[in-house]
Length: 474
Image (cartoon, rainbow, N blue to C red; front, side, top):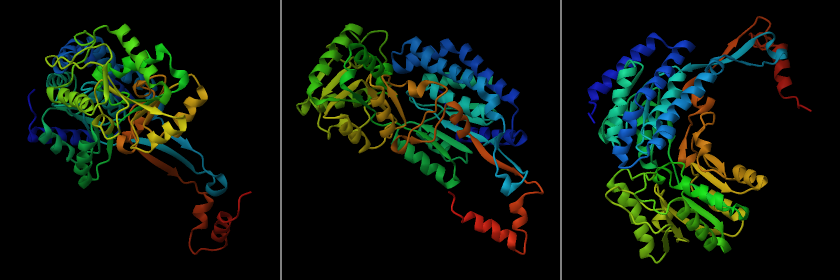
C-alpha cells in the first residue's frame, strides 16, 4: 500500500474545492453518469477485489465479497439511479392562504461540497463506496480514506478509482493513523466515519474547530432476544450463520443472546445441533473468514480465556479449535457470564456469543434500554405483536425480527445509530438527504397578508394577526 502524503491530500482537496465551485449543482444526467462509472469500476475490478480481501483477511469467501462488498455497492447504485430524479425534484410545501395569500414555498436539496469518508477495515470496500454512492448522488465531490488495516484492499481501491474517476470527482487516499487524524481535521463540508467509538470521539474533536458536520457509524453490543416461540431449529440456525458471517466482524452482528431463564440449556443444545449440522468442521472450511490481523485474533481469544479462568462454561459448538495461522476462530458460546466479564462489557466483533437469562420480555427490554443504545437490536418470535412491541420500545439504530442485519443491508432503508452507536445515517432517501443541504425557498406574492400586516407603522392589521395567533383553536 503506497501511502498518500499530506501535501498530496491537500492538493486533492483543493482541486475538488475548485471543481465544486465551478459546478455547484450537477445535473441529473451528470450524477447518473458518475454512478454508472462506479458500477463499471466494481465490475472491472471484481477479481482484484476478491483477491485483495482474501489476502487481508487470510480467508474470505469470494461469494461474500461478491454479495456484500462489491455487489452491495452496485445494489446501492442501482437503487439510487431508480429514485434519483424524484429525490432531486423540488418539494412543494403548503402555505396557509389566509396568511400568505398566493405565495408559494418549496424545499430544494443542494450539494454540500467536498466530502470526506473514513472507511473501516471490516467492510473495506462496501463502507468506502456505498456512502460514496450516496454522496455522488447528492452532487458532491468525495475523497475516501481507505483503511490501513486492509492494505491490499486499500491499494486496489486506489487503483480502481484512479482508473475510472477524475480525481476532482472521486479520489482514494491511503495512510496510517497520522494521515487519518490529518484527514479528519480538514475543513470538509461533511465528514463520515465508520468504526469504533474511541476513534469516533477523536474524529468529532478533529472536526469541531471547522464546525464540520459529521456522520458517525459506530457499533455496540447488539442484543438478540429469543422469545419462547422463537425456539425453532431453523431460527436458531439462522441466528448462528448470521452470527458467524464475516467471522462476526460486522457492526450489526448480534453480540449476545437473551433467552428465558429456564431454557438456557435447551437453547445451547439447539445451537450445538444446528451448528454441527451446518459445519461439522468450521475452522479451515472455505466459508470461514479470518480475523483481520493477529491483534484482533488475540483480543477475541482473550475474552474466551478470561471467561474460562473465571469458571464460566465456554463451549465450542462443534468442538473446533482456533487456527492462529489462518486467524480463524471457532463458534463459541459463553453460558451466563457475569456482567463484569470482558465479553459482556465490550463489543466482541468475533464469533463468541454470551447467552444470558431473562424472566419476562419487559425485563429483557429494560436491560437493553438501561445500557448504551446499540446499533441493532433483534428479536426472534412468531408473535407479530411482540415483534412490534420490541421495535417500538427498544431504542436502537435498527431492529431485525427473525433476521440479523437485513435492516441495515437493503439499499432502500436508512442505516444509522443513535447515541453511543452513532449519529446521522446513510442509505435510502435519508442517506441522499444526509449529504445535501435542505433549503427552504419562499416566493412572496403581493397579496401576502402577513407581509402587509408588518409594514410599519404597526396597526390594526398587525394586531388582528397577533390576536389570531393567541386565539384558542377548538
